[in-house]
Image (cartoon, rainbow, N blue to C red; front, side, top):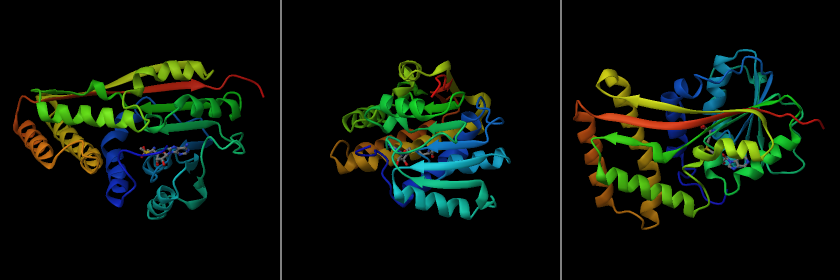
Length: 272
Ligand SMILES: C[S@@+](CC[C@H](N)C(=O)[O-])C[C@H]1O[C@@H](n2cnc3c(N)ncnc32)[C@H](O)[C@@H]1O
């Protein structure tokens, strides 16, 4: 991962924790880790997913792997300040593509919002499938940013959203990777693949959740805008207009928030 659209600053690290408070109930609705003993979270970031998983599955052991030491350090302090027993988790500061890394002891792999930032996601999936033991399971959750639909349409938010998608592409990522998640798992040789788009749809019938999502999405866009501003791709005036549009949406009783992410679940099928 050469560049990361959201950056590694403390504000962004805290956003990853807040993000999971908002999204975990959707992410984990269809993920069942109850049979997993040793889970490896690849690209664990600051430990937001590990915290959720360790709390929800009291018998699981979770290892968090991340290429960035800054993320691991923050994850360590985040988990140390929780009430989770230290023996139930550990960390690895490494690249999943490191050939000497052994994955034999893990029976489950979790990836959340990681492949979108990687120039060659197939290499990462190949590395996991080649080194994991037969029968190990993988659960991947990924973005599909084209599937954001706000009603009424907001031209400035949409323009900025599109700019963030294009910038992510420019730095080697893919903010629409969800659409090809099944193809990637297939091409990497995984078996028993299931692909499920998860649709979040909130209108006046679910106003609390609609407000939570609009607030969260504004923060998400803001975290990309910092980078877009630094690279001359947007202006403060454009961002101010987008903020006014978010305010108008939040005040509009007929507003609708709609977004789909994509989940891919699969099994490692080959013998070693
Ligand atoms: C958007 S963060 C996701 C964090 C976490 N999964 C979450 O949902 O909060 C993506 C993480 O993947 C890590 N990463 C990227 N490439 C990696 C690689 N080749 N090996 C291990 N970690 C990697 C980054 O350092 C970053 O912390």
